[in-house]
Image 1 (cartoon, rainbow, N blue to C red):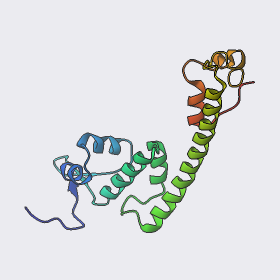
Image 2: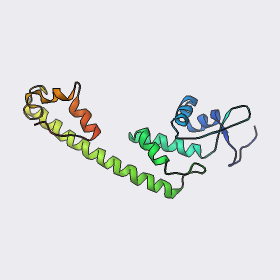
Image 3: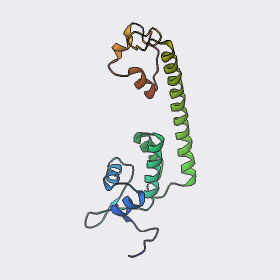
Image 4: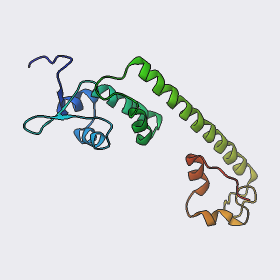
Length: 159
């Protein structure tokens, strides 16, 4: 097998093997604009080597629970013709650090709220005077409304 040079493009199979993900995931990320490829005369995809770094960043973001829309927003600030630099990564990680700090703050607030609710002993969010007086949350829809709002960042108290 011939040895690739740093400037050689990789096939989708080579990228999948190196990144440890399915080719369908690579095609999905390309469809979403997170990575790019060029086409050969036979219409086969070829990926620049720096695609592996982008896929690593995507995988890391997934581990942190960062949505692909946020990854896409960060990637819009990166050049598409080269590997992200240490300076690029510092900027990305600062942005994501702030995002994770905010998520942590919301989860801690939710944890305090949940602990207080369990402590009251009523065990009923339908009639709980502390969190849902008069079942006011029913107006906001079905399901775990407060939990969904906490994840989305809007934990407006029910009054």
